[in-house]
Amino acid sequence: MKFFVDTAEIDAIAELNDLGMVDGVTTNPSLILKSGRDILEVTREICDLVDGPVSAEVVATEAEAMIAEGRKLAQIADNIAVKVPLTWDGLKACKVLSGEGNMVNVTLCFSANQAILAAKAGATFISPFIGRLDDINTDGMDLIADIRTIYDNYGFETQILAASIRTVNHITESARIGADVITAPPAVIKAMASHPLTDKGLATFLADWEKTGQKIL
Ligand code: E4P
Image (cartoon, rainbow, N blue to C red):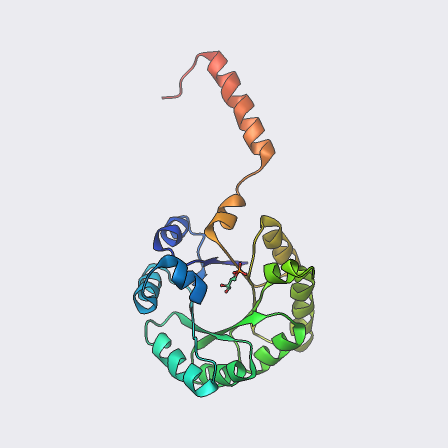
């Protein structure tokens, strides 16, 4: 399973990258806003830092303008994945941009039918948004499972990039179902290391060690 980090914060990406936890990065207009950075500058910095795909999202809504924006974003670095929304125009842009040899991440996917269309349009990645489905009382994991089944039924090569991940359980479930990639905020990836029994066990070990009066160094 590949790990993408869902942020445009350079320091957070660098920390996880140093641990070998970063196979790629996803950004979106909201994350660029949160970073306070210029999209072209910060995306270039991320691409310099990370070897894997770095998703940068177009903001036009009509195919021709999306294609123009996508071509500009793709010039930032060889590891750019142009991110387009799952609209009819987005699918047109996906077809053209992927046909030109670019990686394309089709985002804002909320149904299996949308995922089928993205695969047929040549998407490198399809991004089903788990958390936002959970927000409207729909099980986002069911969508990941449906897409996995359908893509396997027909040998679609588009990679399932489980997105809008809010909890560590979303990551466990995505891994169990067989999502190819997860993208999660740095805090959620770091939370995977936590377990209350680890904390409790460590506290006991340290208390007992103190009683031995010994030192290792
Ligand atoms: C993925 O590419 C998106 O940037 C992201 O996962 C959206 O997550 P959110 O629903 O928590 O904003």
